[in-house]
Image 1 (cartoon, helix red, strand yellow):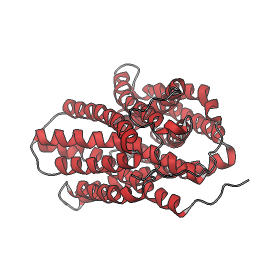
Image 2 (cartoon, one colour):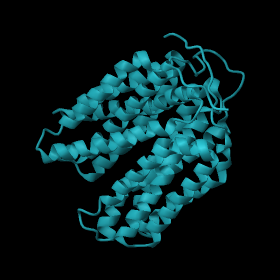
Image 3 (cartoon, helix red, strand yellow):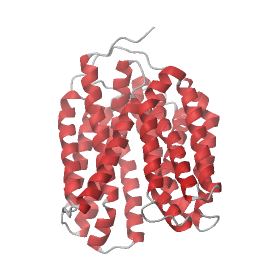
Image 4 (tube, helix red, strand yellow):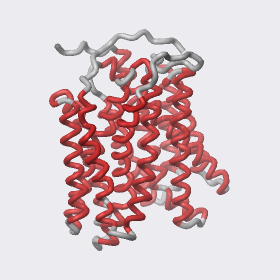
Length: 396
């Protein structure tokens, strides 16, 4: 029996939440691809840049906690709009000609907003998905990935046209600001979190939170590793030309995007469990190819295969986590989202440390091992596709 057609309100909510994901992907890509410009502006070395990135991860994790508190207090609608506006403030602070101390302050503000939007965006996505009665989270993450590609191209195009370096950053700030304002009226108003001060007789499913958190950690360990080290590996270890080395990351992102575009339909046809097992297995094979076939084009293909698992696991993990306890879904998602930043640190730092030992290629066996662990817990994705349900929105 097919689910009822979504209401016009649900469709409007889906559109604006998709915009929030797109704003998130656009802004993050613009920030990370602009780091070399900031490095040159302030005359700092790679160690300082690495410390700034670690500070960003810590601030984003704090932002996820803030999203949980805001969702309990005023709902995830307010949390998501507030997170987007905090990103705007951060982008404006560090995107223009400011002293280094102000730049760091802006970067921290943006990172906190990043964490708030990561968590509250998933909260809103799950709420809207529940109204649709079928998986739609893959489309949200596809929008983020597609916008990230646009953001990277915007920075590259601005550099080629000799535009001021803050041009792309102001564009990202404008997009986030527009979506944040529109979202105040169009984000889903349903309160899924337990309000502050009210006791819940049923504890949160902590074991399941750790389980889906591990899936997120494994996915972002690989994502961070490929993002940070794929170009370095191709250029320094496999001696790829400067024009060829970035293709590993490009192939990876292309595979992530395509996978996210088809994940929702694939789960409808084959179930979440099968999609998780197949996508994770393909990703493991990709990591093995990178580790043991030391040729440029083989590694590029390996990075592309690795992207399949990340593309599917992230939206499906949040989808399944949000269904664990719908009445307190915001709290569950905020806690699962924390593993995002742990994975980012593990992938960027540990893979780099392993490069000095067994080598950078073999270091990609680390995320492969984590993904093998995902196969052992994949049965927890057996949850049925959500059925459409009617909820009474709480006006805020």
